[in-house]
Structures are given as C-alpha cells and as structure tokens.
Length: 299
Image (cartoon, rainbow, N blue to C red; front, side, top):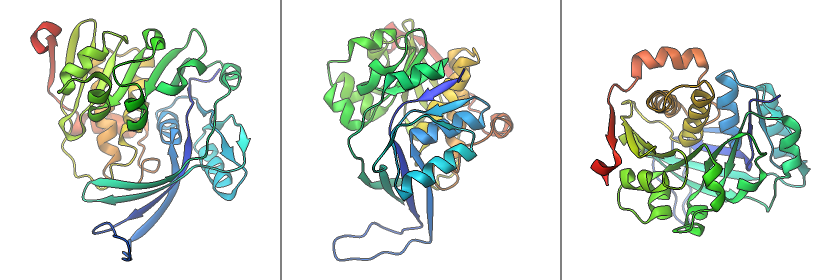
C-alpha cells in the first residue's frame, strides 16, 4: 500500500538563479547558477517522501532525456513513478527575481488513468480541480489548482468537492473561485462546499476554514531566496500532518514552517526538508499566533 499518490503533471524544472532582472526582447541576461530538478507534482511527492511517507506520482513522463532524468531523480528520493511513459516530458524554465518568479512552460496534453492509482491502494491522493474523478473511492482526497483552472471554475465549483478532505489554494486562486475580496472570506465561502478550505497568503501566513470556523496562522519570518515550490511543499506537509491525525491549527503550523524552509534555498524539489529538519525548525521558526474565530465574526 502507498501512503500518498500525487496525480498531476511532473515537470523538468530548469531554474536560472541569480538574475538581477528579466530580459526583454533583444536582451541577454546571465544567471549565476542553473539548477535542474523535478517540478510540479514531483515536488509534492519528494516532500512527502522526505517526511517519511511512501509516495508515488501517477503522471505521464516522456521517454525523452528530460523524462529519463526526472524519473531517475524521483526514484532516488524513494518516490515511485507509476507511469505512463509517453513521448515528451513537460518542461518549465523558472526565472526567480526579487522574491517573485517568471515561467516559460511546455506542457504537452496528457491524462491520468485512474486504474494506475487504484493499483497503488493509496491512503491519500493529491489531485487538481480538473482531475477529481481519478481519485479512488475511500481515499482521503486533497485538491490543488492553478490560476487557469481556477478561472475555468470561477463561481461554479465541481460537485465532487463535497467528498474532498481539503482544498488547498493560494489567495489569488481563492478570490477567483469565490468572487470574494479577502482570503478569510474566500476560505469561509469555499468551506461551504468542501470539508476544509485552506488559503495560503505567502508571507502573510495561511487561513483555513472548516465547520463554520476560520483559523489563521502567521508565517515564519525568513529570507526568501526562491519561492518556487513553496505551495507544493506546503501541500506535502499539510497532507502528512493530516494523515498523522493532527488538528487543523497544528496542520497549518507544520505546513507553514515547512514552506518557509523551502524558500531559503533554490528550487522546490531540492529545498524539501526532512522530518527531522522540520521538527528542529518548528522550535526555531514555528509561528506562535493561531487565531480562531466563528464564521459570523469574519464574514
């Protein structure tokens, strides 16, 4: 049995570190370093594996050079690659500048075969809004999204969310999905459809809502070198903490610290901390402010 399956695109991330600014057409800027790592669902899977869970990715990886590299790196981390093998692998060029990032992405059309997930008999599955139907019945389902998918589902969330354990989105995605103007109100609105709605707010922390209550956790203060993959690793730590049976405020604290650790070094996959490193960091960085309010006080 596998603990968690991450079903979503896995990229080869090429991160150009040390750019002072982004080039405009006709310019050439030089990076101080170049990193090649797994991206997308591969970042979440590596985080889960380093936290001690049996993790797998069910995502098309190509038979090309990029696919061979990504598969090898994931397997070195103990992440099982359950296929399928297809022609070309998604690739993302990541350009971090001043705490933000720009991307150039190639993602060929692909789909996920739910039978590949069922064979792994997972306790939990991490999927996207567009792939809710691939999660086997009886598993704990955790859903993320991207901005494009959030726009497609703005104001009309999928009916399948009613059976989801948690929806994890960032503030921009939450506001698009709900039409609300604050992260707190968006979390409460989403929690009317899903058991637990988690809205990350970057350096401002995270707010989550469940059972008519909103819980806010502050973000640890840390210098950000590269924020790539912070959301993916937040998801990894949240899923791990939930499967450990921790209460919502503690899930959020663990995930917030785990994400904060990731931004201090370059790339998402390479900066995923181990469980021992997380436990040490909880004492060093763990946010102390946990606020809980009834929905009637926040809406």
